[in-house]
Length: 166
Length: 100
Length: 327
Image 1 (cartoon, helix red, strand yellow):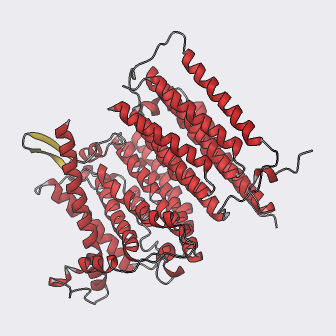
Image 2 (cartoon, each protein chain N blue to C red; image 1 turned 45 degrees about the vertical axis):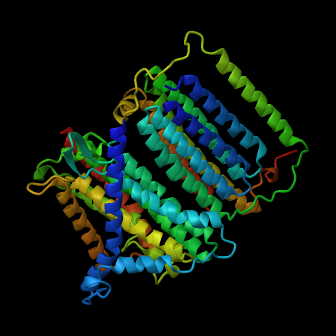
Image 3 (cartoon, each protein chain N blue to C red; image 1 turned 135 degrees about the vertical axis):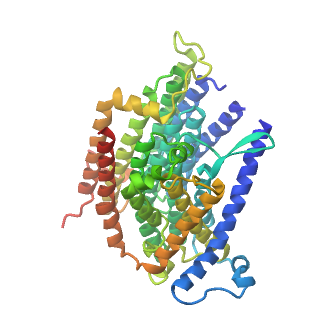
């Protein structure tokens, strides 16, 4: 039963990710990306990470993608009319290299992790907000504070970048 | 129960799709979206490991990765807006002033 | 397993039907109340005391001509009202209506899904409501729609920040994100969080009204501005769905306010569901009262109010709550 849900979600993720990269219209790409992010969030719920699943919807699907859509609409990008490739055969080489990467990753997974054989189920489910928060504020306080400074730097940087010089 | 390797294979496939997206597309915004797909694939494998090892460290890492991805998306889109302002195109092949 | 599915389906059907009935009659109630505030009568001809007015409105909207603008993206044009309505309906799935009841030997909690991150779920679904507005504005291929949609969605995402921060005080006092437990923490009258967090309550209410694009924050959709904003090009039932989404979101904000600040279904004599409905209707009356009374904000006043006043106030609220909890 769980396996059936996982297979459905995985199929939805992969198909919408493929549709993201293959559409001509950027707005449709953005919508398919929202579908991908939504199915990811459900996968996080299936793994028991409820806090991060909801956070994925709030942050990624609710804020970052709205930003993408704003930019696409404000720049008024409708159709992808870019003309032919500048270098011939660029896409073929890209596809070959990516297939090579895929084969490499899957081979690494097949060879496996020495010492751990086929971990079957979650040993202890630690997805509750209190657990994640305790770990975040006790063990990983420095990265947390640094990321908050990073967000401040990003905000200031964006405003400096798009300011019009008169 | 769904074994761990299934999640890792899904994460690998999504990551590879993101790489294809970055290499094939020329629309800068679609390249950004492919980068987000790659980040999501990595988040999935981090959370899968976090649950199977029973440690919340993976989820903390995903939390921080989401914050960093938000910051990076914001700055990247600002750069795209500025480039669009100056040359009216977001084709990454057109951003070539520093080529030899 | 089968009984679980049966009970869940029953709960969903009951809640959905009652909710849609309330949303439909809310349009009638609003028109009557606003009329009373303006010393006129309001619709009273269709059916006894005008009670069949929503039915008449629905029939009118369904039988109107469907207009598709030229060069409009058809898929997105049809998708936008759905994207606006579905999040407004989803929030009701985590709101607790009452204590446990025992029916045919099964103990049923009067909440559709009692998840551990109930409060965050409400915010997640609220932030998904922006997409309906954005899609409606862009896919209509019209300048008025696009401008109205951009203004409206910028307003919604600005007030979402203070919306979330204003209840952090309540979460600090309750220690949990679970809505059932927050309601159970407010068992006696003086325990209600409205007395412990008055500023949080006021900020939450203001941000809820702003999220909802209701007066006095309804500049993007007011009739005298921008030709009705992001749903200029919509006709017939799609237009109806946008309005249903707005009324549904009104009921949602009222329900969440009663759950978080007014003790949900707690109350002395009457059954819990009746208390819940009384409190929700009180807030809906407050919404309509505010609409009939206050003038609307100008857009720049609105944005500076949200960012420069409400956000620092919400942060100050968290700070002061933290200090009080520590002492």
